[in-house]
Image (cartoon, rainbow, N blue to C red; front, side, top):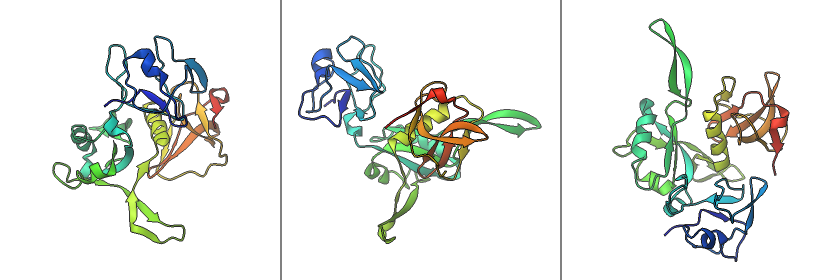
Length: 263
């Protein structure tokens, strides 16, 4: 079974019009997108030949049939409900874990963030590609699927990263710990930050206390699409994000005219 490419999670009791229009997508739910949809704050028509691939904040990207000219950047119906888990790989084997996991049934994606750092090798300074968070990687799947893989061959060196799990009174819930899950929006901003070619971006393994709670989005430049909070660091305006279980990231300098508030 296949899902439509897009459905609005806040709209129900209507048929999806995209399926009827394009005939290469299969109707599967009562969710709908009208003939004009709000995508990234802009009203677009879905009646044209070139259906836009970016989706509004309240939409979910799902699997579509493969056909010529359509980006394969989508997911299977079996991947619906997957989450990003922070995992630990012993002895610097995060890249090995990534390669193995990408071949595993039920694993949608595995990701080792890397960047270039200057290293002195045999008396010469070289740019070397290294893990941003050594011994760690991110895996998009379901907890039950990963629980059957970790700690067993061929992934005996891979384990969940955990965080305390307590009620409002500080009492342990269950085992008192739960796997670290990275919210999708944080993960999207983190990957945009990793991909951005900027020397002055910042990573700290501690969280940041923001003075302003308003969410903003970078609208132009190498950090375009990154969502976070305005911060002042090194005397410059930047956009920062706390990533659960990891720490804090910040863009390089962002002109104020390249930042917009979002709800």
